[in-house]
Image (spheres, rainbow, N blue to C red):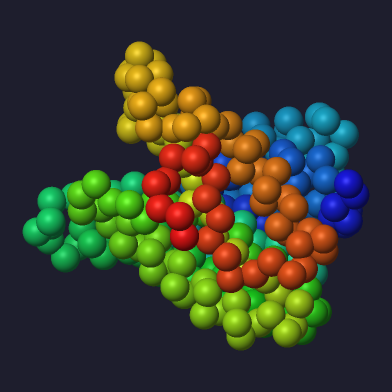
Length: 252
């Protein structure tokens, strides 16, 4: 299927590793002009070189901490300078923040800023231009709604789901869609180095908790993202779509 993405401009945060990294390669394969955002510039340049080596336009590298004050405006300026606008925004930056239930305010503030507030601010930088051009796609990489304890990211991603649904209703008539994708266990830096560093434990977890029986790859998210960003997916908006091998247990 031709996803009709050739020439579309796409900005991906959290692109140095994991889901953002895998998605960037897929979007480039589909003909998108890509901008990569993350803190680690060397990793972004390695990815940009890999994409260029595959015969695609070399992505724009934006080494930026999305939580820095003023970062959303700086990222928009760089994207607009490169592309003249933006068609697709993939909010992939974020991180798990398990904490004690009575953690201090600054811990909550840090986690909510990374996982909700700066995502919201960055999206708001691009929505007006998308509405004006009558085309836009916003994809939020979120997280589980089945918390096993107190985790700032769970609270923040729940907020993203509610905010994204409300925003989707406002911008739909202008050709802009907003969808959220909670990943399951995807082979990424966070999963392999922090949450499940022991290969034997990973295998046990996959067999006991994931009906598909294995951890996913970043591309398992990326292919769905590419479809949702395409004109083919124009009638899908305001949705929360799990990509987890069947791991989540609720029906809705």
